[in-house]
Amino acid sequence: MDRQSLTTLLQPLLKLRQACCHPQAVKGQFISLQKSTMTMEELLDQLINKAATEAEESHRLYIAALNGLAGIDIMQEKWAEAAEKYREVLRSAREHEGKIKTDTLQKLHTITNLVELIEAKHPGISPTMRDSELRSEAQSLKDYYMGKYFGGVTAAKEAVEPVTTLVENCYAGFVNEHSWYEEVITWVEAADQEKQIMKLVHDEMAQFYDVVSEKEFREIQQKYPNSRLVLYKIFEKLADLNKNRDAVTKEMKNLSETNPEEFLNKAIDCHLRVSTSSQKHKKKCRLCEVHDIIEIYENTLFHFVKGEIKGSKGPNRASVTSDERKELEKAGVFLYDEQKKGTWSDS
Image: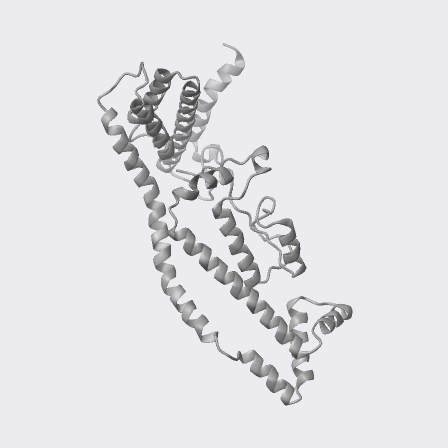
């Protein structure tokens, strides 16, 4: 045996011996860094948890490899070989049950494909006593996996309903024939207080946009020379706000009333099968379209400061078209959030 192989075999035993001598000897390698010294029992628990995590990840890779090989067999119409690989996945899951967690989505994928192979009655696939239970087992896994998400959606819906009612009642209180700001500006004009009110408006805008030079302040004065123009801008902004709010409300209602299966496949292609070639000539899925409408409404409702948001990672996602983004940036609105794509999430 060569020296490198010998070192590879003995290195874990060396670290274990060091840990037995003193827990801090391998601090930061097997266990997370801590200021306090752990007892030997705590160190053992840490090592067991680490080994269990590594075993689960190795098992996940093993199942992924078997499922991938079974998929290749299906493409080559080797039905019996594919079924045997799927059965091997189920045998491995049963063998390690209670010791190593098996990925729920991987198991669901395996059982669903195996059931389809069996029901298609391909030659060479030997039946087993559990075949009649596979369909119900797949449904149980699906219900278990989706249950936590349905529960979260239901809880969120229950939490948002009273807030929605409160917002609707508050919103209805502002819908009047004459708005308060219109009455204020009309009174200002009648009382000859135009200069005083415009000075307040210009000062507030200068502070809001962080104006630091006299030139920039004069630009604000030129852009908003009188109270009637300010009133027009208020009406214009509120009209955009109401239009975008109605669009978001309408689209969210349509989504909630639509069967998810109608847009599920397009959402999978859009979010999970991300590649350069597939992105060139494809349309956005329904979820992305609604997401963009929500972004436009948010950027109408809130003021975004140019610059990177602290804690954000990666490039900014182009959630609207380039023309729409330019229009938003001209108005001082910059989009920085990034939608999660290209991952199957955890299970």
